[in-house]
Length: 583
Image (cartoon, rainbow, N blue to C red):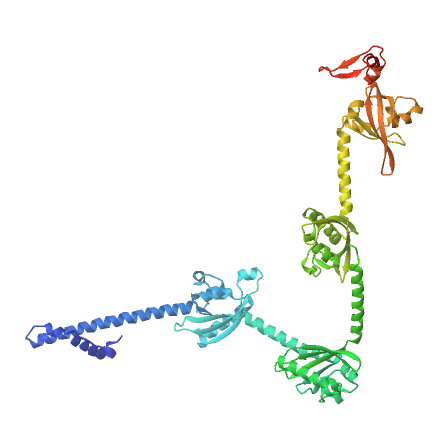
């Protein structure tokens, strides 16, 4: 602030403030000069206080301006640098720090040319020399790529440099703008323009060589262009068609409706497709608006008479095939490699899913399997898809009507390739009753096996034709002294002692003498029955040891044998006679 400019104004304001303060009234002095001095001092004091306030306000404004300048400088959208003549960096803002990829503290004192690509450094040096020598505002676009980036074979960035000499003759100010993306867009635009030219040539070529009739109309249905196929369809030359009304080529009964369709496309700016019959042919027309104002319309006409006939045949064939599939007395299914249904019959929908209108696209085959059968189902699916294995049977339980009941099915599946895509096609037959009978048989056989193996009496199963021992229980092993596996390798002839002519009789049902593993002979009675298993005749025999009874029967004396409790365990024939007992 300069007093010469503002002193009189400040003096005037100080005098007014002094009058309002009333300080003169408190000075009790008769001397006029003293009163005048005091008044002057008071006014001057007020003047100084006002100057101080204005100075503080000016200081505050300067601080705010400095802060704002610093923020604008540091966070400007372009990089700001102050360079010396040898490109040494003296000042840099935050944006320059980001553009150069270096901390500002490291940038200060570094040379800017180090960030310039080696091939561009001569251009940069010439640019800086002109800035300092001509004192002009100059612009240069060049590639920035420091040594570290180049060593990593990373792409550099294109920067636009704008420089002007500063008040200091040894420094200049430089701005950096990253125009890499701008240059890329410029190249892309050049490429797009070339593509556009090529596209226009291609469109004209396609229009001329399009096999289906195609023509161009304006809003009044005037024909502006047409290809040879359209000329052939209507039996006129291109010269005869250009600038004529396209509606006049239609049967009279179609002209009004066709005009309405043209107007509909013109207004909606959306394509329209429809079919109608013209002179005994079914034609499909496609109307396309080709510009934003809707003043042009591209029309493609396709004769689909043969296509419709084929479609009708295909529908009939499809209905016939579906009828055959639905007549299958079981599940028919087609699934993709993820186990997702893509097709099936009514049996699948009604019996398994429980919904005749079910959308199979939302159902997976594994979701219908019993949880205990899913792992096996996944393995079969993977083998069929990944390994291209042959048709494979699979027994599993399928949910019925959405649950909770499950029934057993036998499924035969194989891989099929349709339109280059792998699918699995199969048929599943309900075997629940057969499976129940099979499980019951298995349980029965298991019970028989347990009874056979754990029974206290010695038991054997013998081949009726050869005499080979098929099976024996633990009681037989204990009685004969051979292990079960050893007995199963033996023939009954190795055990029976009687003569050859008696062997067959002894096998089936007789009293005879058998040899044990230790070479001793035991008198036995065999109670047997013939059974048939897997088409082979077998003899199921129970062997009773009667050695002791035979011994007692041979004695003339009456002998009674008891256990420690006095219970009679055996008795001789003579004892029976003596005690007049029958047995």
